[in-house]
Length: 129
Image 1 (cartoon, rainbow, N blue to C red):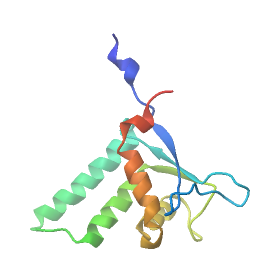
Image 2 (cartoon, rainbow, N blue to C red):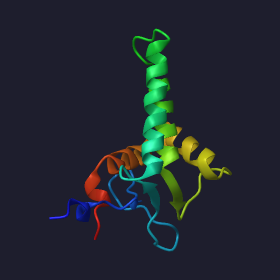
Image 3 (cartoon, rainbow, N blue to C red):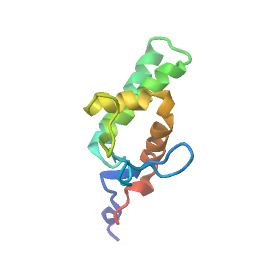
């Protein structure tokens, strides 16, 4: 068997659910989703490296326990670097990586970052169909 036949896709689409578990849709009933890079992509690997370096830098500077705020910021930067697009919605008047980061940092819609974080960590979401 050629193991490379099990290679995963670089991206996937995460269909969003609201905090009540209901599928999120726009005013026309189209699903809201986020397209992300996964663990088999160079973009993910680069973002993971940046996250690891930020954590190591914190420890190198003598940090004992990272604040929740700092950890949340590092996680939002990672997710933003792995995000290709928000599909069917925007966040405030922002665009691109800044929009992604600020949306992931917003605790009032934290359920979105949580879903993306869960999806990005599951290799099964990136399997070939």
